[in-house]
Length: 118
Image (cartoon, rainbow, N blue to C red; front, side, top):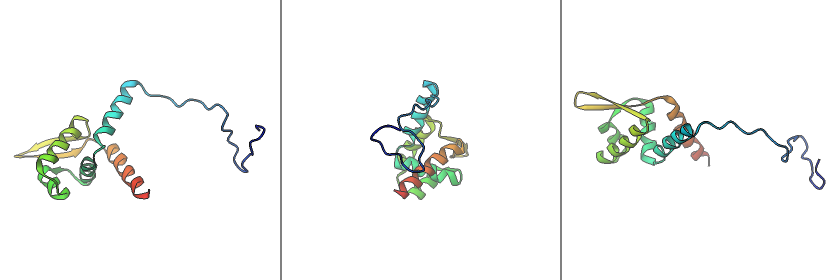
């Protein structure tokens, strides 16, 4: 015990003890993760991910669900597509968008839940 510092009952952690460093992924992995988080950092893009979490959608469905213009939805979809968050598949005259995987939906859902708690 350090002189002058009271020990908290039931708390054995020594804040001055050395703890092993957490493993750090390669720089390329950290850069890619940062790119994904930046792509998710706009409210409209968060809303798009939440919509696509439910099912694949075309642009006009996203326009109707989110109440924003078609050019704005298309612009945000381009950002999400470039970051590897969504994929589009042509179906006749429409492009159906879907999430690349569920990991990204979990990030968004957790962030929204955290914001609602706060």
